[in-house]
Length: 223
Image (cartoon, rainbow, N blue to C red; front, side, top):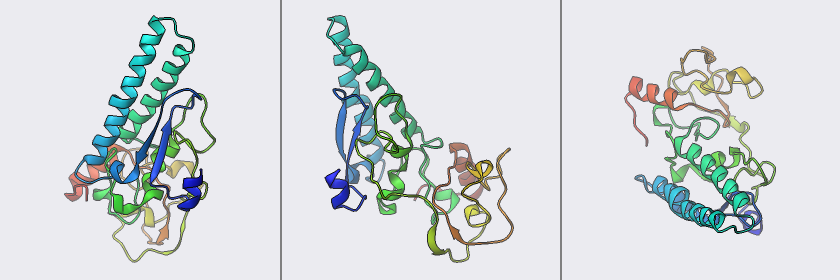
């Protein structure tokens, strides 16, 4: 909590935990979690399958030996691993969205760009949901960075092509029909307006399919 305050809710040390008071937790360095060339993904995979996996093996051994509380600790750890798996996969609401990057350069799964900043890259961890324990709005983080929000930023975007930046044309924060894959052209998704409005929204969500099709259409890769 003090770390969050010191760095104005942009912490570079994140404490991931399973919500159990005697369960698994790990301090992870944001700079390693968001390192380039796939290193960030490999770091999260190590937390998910190596460190957390070893903890789960200990709880399974405890179950076999009749250790009190092992069942609850294992269940909490399994729940956390499920959430981390979803972040690695990157389907909404566990996706990363960066409004100033064109559709074809949006990350697919956990493939963050450290230069996009803590506010955007921490979102999947705060959108995750533990079945038991945890703090309201903190997701799988031990403490919630209290001032992080993904609403509209001040100012307007410069003119941008709507096919590459559909969110600058008619997205509405409070319209559930537009919450996922807005302007992607996928069946069932809301279409972007033909009129550019330049609003700087940050809390959109896009599926892997929408991003993959945008890359195929526009010839992009992650930046």
